[in-house]
Image (tube, rainbow, N blue to C red):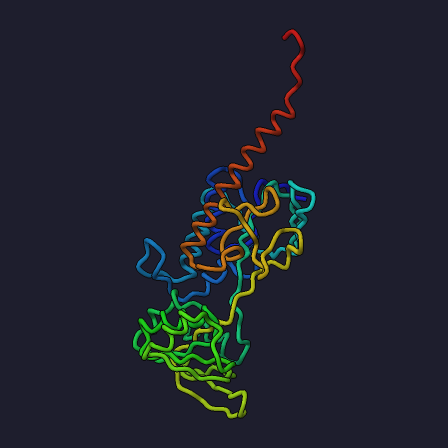
Length: 323
């Protein structure tokens, strides 16, 4: 087994920030990248709301973050975590497909993935008209006719937000009533830019010769009628799934499967910290994830320092009477 001071599970913005801070503390962190370097940020076509950059592509920002962390000694391992053992305390066991590590501290930044429709044209349309974040991508749809899929609080609030940019917003919902809260529904139905298609699902996302989204195929769940509607964008808000199953019941999760942390990003396991979308159900922004990753790293650094002092006292020879 390889013994490391800090293992960071996940390489999104929170993981990148945690890697930078722990590397600068000379802890030589090892980042287990996962299935996508940079997480969701890496597949965001353009980012315009990260401080310091008027506009930068997601892949470019992630590469900059990686190089910055590597400059101070962080190591990135392109592998995935298969299992962990947090039951015996530090050092913790982190097993990947290629290696088994012992880690004095672990920072979990494994993220959460937006639920997909899993329909034809969706995957190919990401970055070309398909999006899962109105705050991230709304600006690029200024003056366009777009579709929002969903019916809960997130879908309704994002639909309202997107009217700041879009010419029109059509919300497609599989039921005949919204699940969003009453205040949100009131604002939704009062907005003249929004219309709703009830009892319907999006069956396919169409594209033009250049691969740009240009239509959706809809199916009415009551009548079975199938229609095609022109659109220039499809925003999907049907929930998120945290990537927490790998931890089993070894760490405290809320009812939705997100890791529970305190204000300093400590989890229920002493020495294990969490940051970013694995513990953040609310904001899900690059900037907030970076801040959370920074906080988790600083807490981990302090925890390791305190533990080192305690161990040093335990290891010190007992004083001899009369010395």
